[in-house]
Image 1 (cartoon, helix red, strand yellow):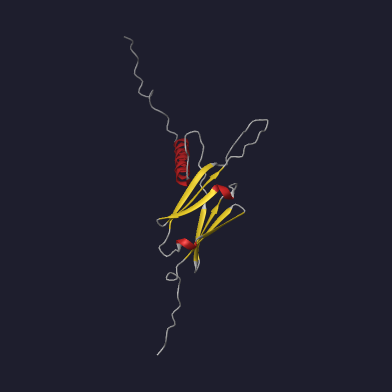
Image 2 (image 1 turned 30 degrees about the vertical axis):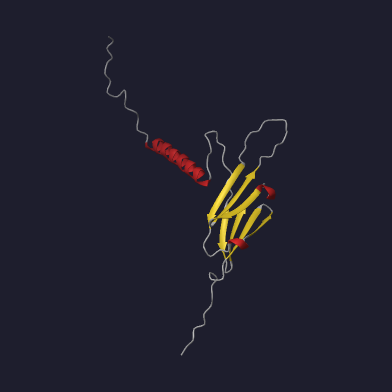
Length: 159
């Protein structure tokens, strides 16, 4: 049996408050980035491939709800819109461009793949009158309101 002299300072690490704190901040930033990646449609696997999740704007005017989705690089024929049980679903696929080029790829940040976005429709939408248009990579879906849902002006009589 070998005897080792006990040194009380041997297992104590130096206290470096600034560098320790910076390491914690970097780790926290990485965790926040991962959380937002998952929220947006996120990391599909550990290889770093991400899903394509088109961003949308939803607005309302007096007669319609309007959904606008950015679909850059997606062809019109690769998009389908369905309404079933009060849910509007936009499905499609952004296909990766296949280029035969000599040389190495250094970075690929654009996302590809199938996507699906679903929206629960208000009961005031006339689902049989929904219209969609596609222009310059922006899909616009017009959801007309029923007559009961449209604002009506009532004249107030003063006596």
